[in-house]
Amino acid sequence: MQCTAFATADEYHLGNLCHDLTSHGYVEITSLPRDAANVLVIGTEKSAKDDDAGMIFFFREGAVVFWNVEEKTMKNIMQVLEHHEIQPYEVALVHWENEEMNYRKGEGQSKLHKGEILLNSELDIDEFVLQKFAFSNALCLSVKLAIWESLLDNFVESIQSIPEILKSRRKVKLSHADVMQKIGELFALRHRINLSSDLLITPDFYWDREKLEELYDKTCQFLNINRRVKVMNEKLQHCMELTDLMRNHLNEKHALRLEWMIVILITIEVMFELARVIF
Image (tube, rainbow, N blue to C red):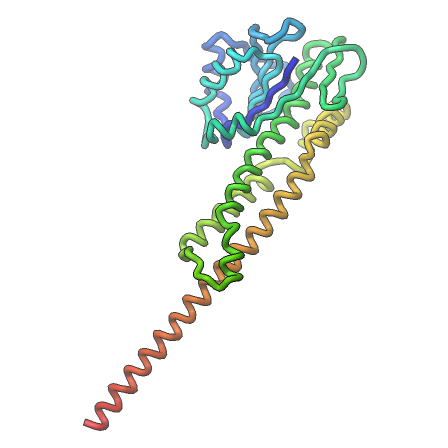
């Protein structure tokens, strides 16, 4: 069976989304503990295979994870989801930066092994939902990070020619407002990664649930979450240094222009004074 994750927006209106989905015949699953906040779990009979019931996890942070849901139903749910997104991402980007993992039910402890999820078939339904939640939580972080990686790559591409321009002493065709806009874009992206998410911190939910924490951590390790965040921060730091260099360059040009204006004004004043003395 297949588990598929998408990051489609900055955030979801989960309350309105729940009402909309239940009105379409889907069933809300309410067995998660109360401290598993900011997530909506929906069940569907439209499963891709008969071995497991279809289940969908919607995270308030703007990511959705489908477990064994047939493709047609997945598309229908994505269409409903569009009406409850805050700051949606481009559709092409959403489908390009998804995550897919195979999973199966069987004997033994639930685990992630060689990129495949194994779920203990002897678990009761509530524990089953909890373990799917732990795997989904890690997949949610991965697809959100993939979107941010793509946004940062686009930003890097937009400024990558500037070092060569400065090196060759050519004129940088960016105004002070353009540079400040670039700095603002960088700060916003850095805020998203480090302040608006728990990419480097295990959520409090897992602190007294060691088995679930192990599943969550193992999946994050498999998806290279920590290494990817570190690489992103290094890129962000490099971009910050470059935009600071651009801003200093423009400030120096502005200061030089002011100095020349003062020199010209003093020269004019001296000429007027000489003219008054001579004539």
